[in-house]
Length: 460
Image 1: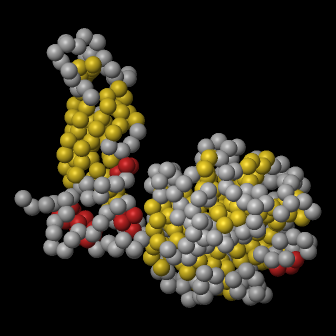
Image 2: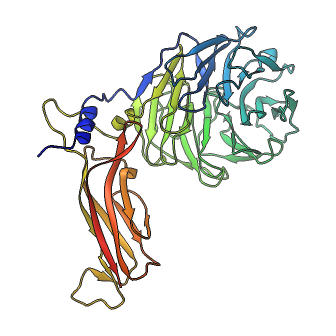
Image 3: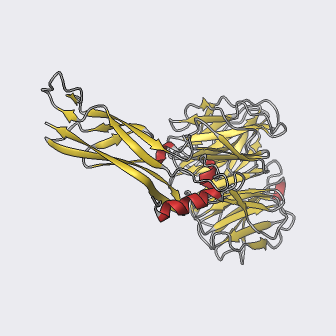
């Protein structure tokens, strides 16, 4: 029996994927150490680094512009915030006047110096923006308090009257530009720290008033603590860090919040110190550091190490726009086909046919809902929630749980994976169907492959 052409194409694709081909290195003509990264979408990406360097692509990485900001050749741009192909802010670090903020509105052809630090005690680490006219930047503590500046919708930056008290020996890390982030369109901002104390500080009023919350991430030395934070929404977020002087230590370097940063729960599974973290979607998280990168497909419960490359930062804007940067001009893009290997697919042995992903059976706890079931009818129940179990042939035994696809004629499916619940609580008498299939990555989208199975339930 001939296999469908679509499945044959899938198998050919699987057979050609290397386990080490998830990250695709970009051809960028620079040796700058890159730490700032701003992914606008799958076509537009900006990054920044040493030697006054800014790079930009507007065609998804087919070509890159390398820009040296005039008058900034000795500066280290540790953070960048971009909004489209033309508009971006960059922040340089350093004592005194080395800390600066520039802005371009014409794709890097011209840069306006908007802020030059005049406080010799200040050392700016990061910038974060709510939109292209409202941003906030922060400095390590000055006289016991973190220093913040905002531009208030203009080109002029002013000091924020902030109450963010710092502990002695506490500071933020200018490692990836993600120690400071904004959330949503207005007001909310987060700051993560290290040194003597690893805390998460958050403000709900543009940086004027702050609450500081302890975390289970250990600190105590100048190189340890929290290095990066990412928030999926206002409530759910992740922090990563460790000790950059001990990059292979892989304990107590990950934590999660589900209440907007008020409490943090320790996670496990990262393979070393991590300086950057990003959400791809609610369930998919990527973290990077000097000894490699890790990915989680279940919201941080379990992690898989991708590679051992040296990274500084990572950012995603959906599954087709995932980038990472590092030393010596390193820029990489995670291709969607790379997700096949990440999710457990193994190449087919030469001259052998791999089984196509397919649903073999769909098992329901009962197929009739009635308040007057006969004792001899084991498939009848008065319960309006039906337990569903999919039996599938899959290429990878650890296939991503969200690849199981369910279609129902009425009601809703609760949960995800091979075992779910079909809720028919308010269904009127009648016949209803459920279909199960495997919707897996193919090219730039998901498609159903192999056989699907449909079952019906009668409501009396």
